[in-house]
Length: 170
Image (cartoon, rainbow, N blue to C red; front, side):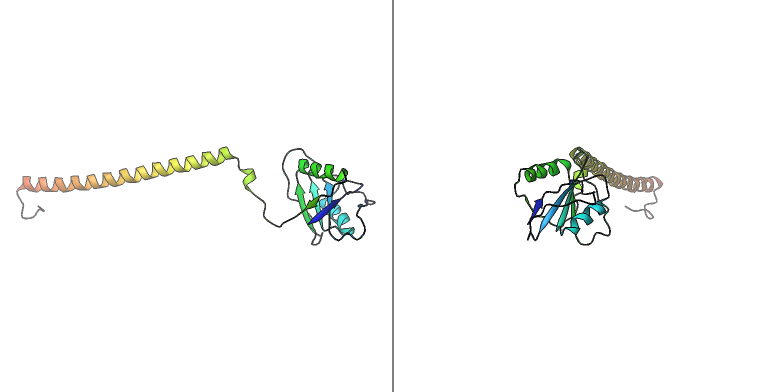
């Protein structure tokens, strides 16, 4: 578990940025607002103050995050959250509440990019195509059996007409 602490420059871009971390604090997380400088600069400034992790909240009100390019920042954990979540955390910090956070390594969920209507449409389309394909196969084999039976009956009839039953099948 980590605690968030306040920073004077919420963007973390100024060279004079100071994080207000109480002495003897072992693990803490820097909460920074996206914008004005690179992710790498923000992360390196927080790492200079021994931050265990950096949480950057988006600067756009749409509820999306992006993949951050931050090569060359070492092993520090970096997470991006939405603007609404970032402002919620910031309001707790500004109210002098202790905010604890647990960061777990995982994968990015791709399900948020798929809306339910699209999923239903694709599922129904797949089922309809499977039904049409199955029906086509069934009718194809029925026709093949009917053709085979008709051919056999034709041969028997031609044999009877020709009265050459010794060379024909019965």
